[in-house]
Length: 505
Image (tube, rainbow, N blue to C red; front, side, top):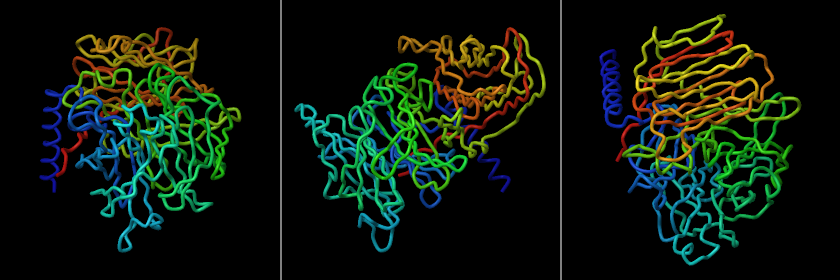
């Protein structure tokens, strides 16, 4: 057994060395496709011990093209195996975003011999109708699997929801609504979300619309998701809506609303704009179906401003780390929180800690614990007294700065000198997010991979995700504060790589 474990560790090290030399910006514990283009996560579902991640994929290039559904699987949300492509374009069009449900009672009739089907509900995008200037080139279709997601067959009577004449009519996210024994579809329809219901996933009835006069409208609404969360004995419904452009720091981003849903109408407690992530690189994220009490979320870790231009090859794009969502209340107002999933603990390596200590000026934190890979998790809590920054650096002079500015009460990520930035004007700059918590203790968690940082502040109340492209690994870490801060607790933990396994044939 020990010999096998030693061989496995050696294999991981060899894979990491090869990737580091030939693909210097390849994420080491975020999912990325082995080759070619990826964007939105699709159809995420947990079934019989396996997490399925489908994703928008163009298998013939590293920029957007005719969309397929790529496919990857994991038993722990950390170690992923890329599978053969699940859905290919056909005479009805490209395979755009959608969702997968476990039809446990076989309401669709697509199951066989007592086997509950997995049913994919997705948007067909017809490029021929689009070229003809038709407003009906997107419509909703089904595919199903009766072998636990290994192979998929398209429903013979597609589409199941024709387009009524809306140019942007896409991204169905479907869930079962138990009180009324029906399926609910949240669909992006240009500048709003339209809700449909069905008893069988095949016949759909319009229920209501939401959003024309709520939230941010800097771009087209996309990739909705509607789900319940419970906190302090109260259950509320959360509606996610991605928007491009119009994000708080330019380009793509995902807003959310919290309110009530009665099977027909969504009524928000507030129509103001709130963001699940204030960073530039978390888009089109939705939740994983069939996870029981946990609500797990994953997003595309890029931005349409530069997603096709980032300096990576032979692949483009990665997903965020999986996150667990929750609700919290501040002065009678509800907010969504997100924190890294506990499954990431399997990546933990050596660590160093610090307690009850003042830091003034700068303090290096990697001299005692060398970390050439630059992969780490940092948990820190400090008294809310002065400005401070956490600096990722290397010997080439590259820096990514994550910090807190007291006067404006904001967190920020500054990638001005982060390495390669010239592929898009404005990539290398400072981005901010408001601090929503009023606690006197600031608590931060950073998750850092080869080319990304994810900031979870105040127990996930303020979140920022940013990608960057250094000239060599960010193996150095400093904490700086000109006026000084008091560290209550600090834990720096090295993380081990978990590279996506090649496609299984």
